[in-house]
Amino acid sequence: MAEKTIAAIASASGEGALGVIRISGENAISIADSVFSAVSGKSLESLKGYTAAYGVIKDNDTRLDDAVATVFRNPHSYTGEDVVEFSVHGGSIMLRSVLRLILSRGAILAEAGEFTKRAFLNGKLDLTKAESIMGLISARSEAELRLSRAAHSGKVSSKIAEIEADLVAADASVAAFSDYPDEDIEDLNPENFLRMLRNAEKTLHKMLRDYDAGKILSEGIRTAIVGKPNVGKSTLMNMLSGEERSIVTNVAGTTRDIIEETVTIGDITLRLADTAGIHETVDTVESIGVKLAKERIETSQLVLAVFDSTSALNKEDLELLEAVKTKNTIVIINKTDLESVIDKSVFKDMRVVEVSAKQGIGYDELKEEIIEISGTNNLSADSAVLIGERQRACAERALDGVEEAINALQTGCTMDAVGVCIDDAISALFELTGKRVTNEVTDEIFRRFCVGK
Ligand code: GDP
Image 1: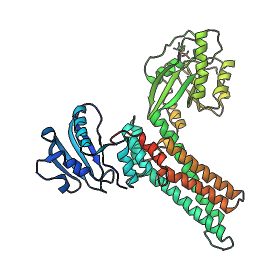
Image 2 (image 1 turned 90 degrees about the vertical axis):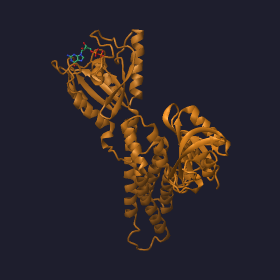
Image 3 (image 1 turned 180 degrees about the vertical axis):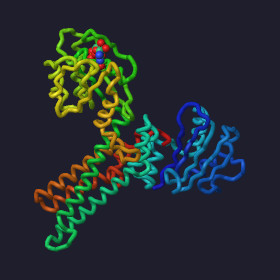
Image 4 (image 1 turned 60 degrees about the vertical axis):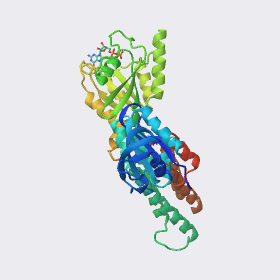
C-alpha cells in the first residue's frame, strides 16, 4: 500500500538551538531535494542511506535557513520508509516556514503518532515498544523512564513471547490430545498441559503485580493519614515531608482542611492528604473534614492510621481501626518518646510501626514498610513492566483465559473447551503486542502520541 508522504516538526515547540523537521514516505527524498541545495552540489537522491549533507533550504530564490539533511533509505529508517530529516535553527516561526514549504511541495501534514504508526505497520516495532516510546518522552520521573527504557529495549515483548510460546504449545497439545485421545504419546497428557498453563499463569500474575507497582512509581501512591485529633498526624506529615506545612497545635481538632502535598520516599511519591481525624463532632467545618477523611480512606491506595501511644484506645480509635482494616494500612503508634499505655494487641496481624514523629524516630522503619507494601522493591531497572491501561487489560484477559483453561482441565471439561479458553488467552496477547489488532485499536493508540513522533 503506497502511503502518502508525510511531514511534521519533530522537535519541541519554543526556541531551541536546533529544530528538526521529518519527512517520511515514497517521495520524501524528492520532496526534500525540491527545497534543499547541498553545498557539495549533490542531490539527496544521489546519497546513500545514513548520510548527511549540509546546505540551504530555499523557497525558489528565497533562502530560508542553513540546514543539515540526513537521508535514511527504506527499510533502514524509523518508519521503514524513505525518510529525510532537516536540522534547522530551532525557532517556531522558522520551523513552521520550512514545514509550510515542504507541504507546498506535496507532503501532507503528519497526524499525531503517524511516524511511529507507520513503523508499527511496517513491522519495525511491536505495540509494547511503540507505547514505550511515549513513556520515554513523557516520563515524569527517573523511575518511570527506567521502566519505559526496559519496555523499549524489548523486555515486555520477550516476556509476552515466552507466555505465548507456552500457550501455543499447550494449545497444540490439547488439540492433538482431543484428536488422538487413545494414542499413548508421552507429551500428550493433561499434566503437561497443566504445567505449561501454570507457567503462563505465574508470569502473567507477576506482570500484573509489577504493573501496579510500576504505576505507583510513575504516578505516586494516594495516601491518607488518619487518626483522632491530636494523635500527631500533622507532625508525622511534617516528619515525612521535612517541612512545616500543616498547622500543628496541641488544641484538638485544628487540622481542618485536607491539605495535599507530595513526599518522596526512596523512589516512591506519596500523594498525601493530611486529614482531620475520624471523630464525630458538631463543628460543621470539622465535620466536613471528617467526611473527607472517610472518603479519603475509601479512595486511598495506602492508609497511615495514627494512634497515640500515651492514651488508651477508645471507641473512636477502634472505629477507625475497623474502617481501615480492609485497606492497605500501616498502623503508626506515635509519641514513643513518651511513656506508652496503649494496648498493642488489637493491631495483631497488621503492619505496625512505632515512631516519634516529633523527634523523627522510626522514619526508616516506616519507609521500609511503605516500600514493602507498594510492591516496588520487586521491580528492578530492567523489569518487564506493561505500559498503560490497554496493555494491562489485555494481560488480564489473557490471565482470565489461562485460569479458565486450568479450571476446565481440572473439572474434566472436554479438551475442545480447554482449547477455546487457551485461544482466548492467545488472542489477548496478540492484541497486546499488536500481532492481531483492529485498525480502530491501532488508531486509538497512536492518536495519543504527539505530532512528529
Ligand atoms: P493532629 O491533630 O493529629 O494533626 O496532631 P498534631 O500533629 O497537631 O500533634 C498534636 C500534639 O502532639 C502537638 O503538640 C505535637 O507537638 C504533639 N506530638 C506529635 N507527635 C509527637 C511525638 O512523637 N512525641 C511527642 N512527645 N509529642 C508529639
